[in-house]
Image (cartoon, rainbow, N blue to C red; front, side, top):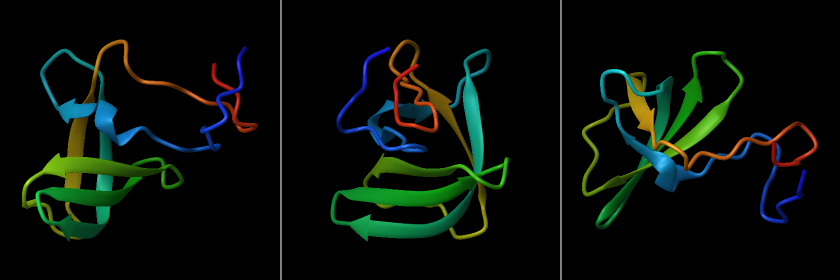
Length: 89
């Protein structure tokens, strides 16, 4: 196992989330805060496990509102997982 110096336990890579598609891996979370920054929006959300915090980057102005359930796809082969010590698994 290699330690990724940029990895933090529980960290997520926002650029690897895509629109949810039938048959592909997905993640559902409840939007907590939406931050609009010009041409990019960030949705800060809590996964349905009640513990995992994720950040979803969207192009343009997000139509997501606080409290909404958001389901995103995970880009095949691009997602990275880390154990509690920050080691890539």
